[in-house]
Length: 236
Ligand SMILES: *Cc1c(COP(=O)(O)O)cnc(C)c1O
Image (tube, protein in one colour):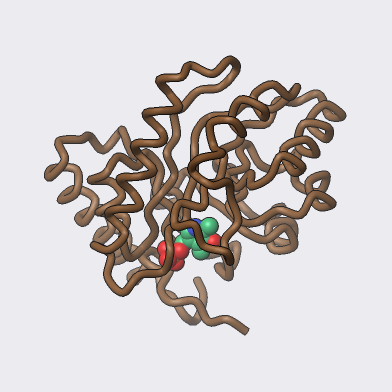
């Protein structure tokens, strides 16, 4: 393990996450198997990631290409997602290394994923990133443009749209994000009801360490947790 995080601390963190999750599931009448817990592993070394995997973490997400590549060979078998902003010129570096790209935030990026996926004869699952808070600083499609983007991207070869992902604005309290999670769920259901060819709305990725309970209450199917599992990151 790392100097920053002991095995015992991770075990306690995971138990605390599961108990928050249980409370949110009880409140909303949902089941544990409806939720995928993905560990956001930025800044976490491979050894610690492998420990988390040994404790039952079966999905991990990296948000930087360089970091994903540098740890890739040292990480035990697990479902791997890409969750950060992806530059088109880096798509080829990760296309064969992740099973799902959560953060498709432009048509241009989707086209490049399609192109690179064709080259290796693979179909890549993606989520469409929605800028639900309408923030200028954030990546993603506006809620108004999302259905159209899903339709256009679903039409590309070797790419399969599986749902939506969002990172709501930074709020002072988790409760403030409830309105964004509700908006996301509504959009998710609305697009699902449109039955867009070659797409499915099966994954709604929202909720992070501070607010995943609220996201689960509001319909998230996948939560992305970093700090709650691994402790505070030290950025260099
Ligand atoms: C880091 C990260 C997370 C996890 O954030 P925490 O607040 O530490 O749980 C989730 N999603 C994305 C896209 C991230 O980059």
